Image (cartoon, rainbow, N blue to C red; front, side, top):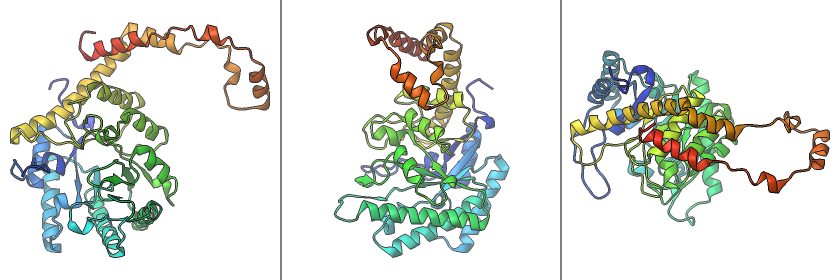
Length: 388
């Protein structure tokens, strides 16, 4: 096995909707034949993935009878058993069916809100039945085209009520489950509520069971807003809320491209992988991406292998970065302290405040420092280009 070939311990996962994507877009019909969930499981096992994630209707059609549902789930479980794949995460499709055209949890129609909640509870049951430990909420239709239609305060209250209900349900059922909220700034609605990971983190603090709820940040969604994904992930990690992560790629400010991981912005992908490895993130690494519309069945496999290989290549580049003597010498110089301000450690005291106010600083001399960030960044680029 090559050094960039994935192994189960790498914890790489894909959604049924990712490798199963038929290549349809707003301007074109599908270009690939549908793949059944059982076939997808075997495909992913064949390329070395660890697990498979799903929306409820990726597996069970929305109009399936209870008998049909049980048969489909049994066949899927059999495929998991045959391949050894696991289901670490599940979620609910609250955006495809016409009933959700005005929203789901935030809809102005109480019948839609109740149906969305019913659908979610049943989907939570399915996810737990399949072994999922993380349940993701992406509010694909939770937004507006015109703010004349509803109050954002009312919408957030409705979202809060729904999530509180789901938390209480999971606790009442004794489920070993954590919830993760996924932000996106727009698409398919003009403006989506809670558009960034930071907004989600602030919202979580208002929930009744905030300890159960974290975030599922996605590369493409932060890049759509022109934001630094690494910083969103770092804030989530620092808050103890990085429950899951969606990896793909995306040019800044574009529509939701969902490119293969590392396909567009390799430097940003490197910093992300380096961070996840440095902090010891142990959750699954989920690729929420699609093969190019140009691809057939073999191209879909190339896409899946490419996502995993790029992560492992960048993981090796991060190790090179840490082992490079010139880079580490520069970093040691940048972060060196002479100890003269050690007395400020440990937080506030009245005496420290008095002493700080009396301290003399030569700001002109301090400003003369040369930080050498140009050199540091060039060395980083050289690591990525394979010349170091």
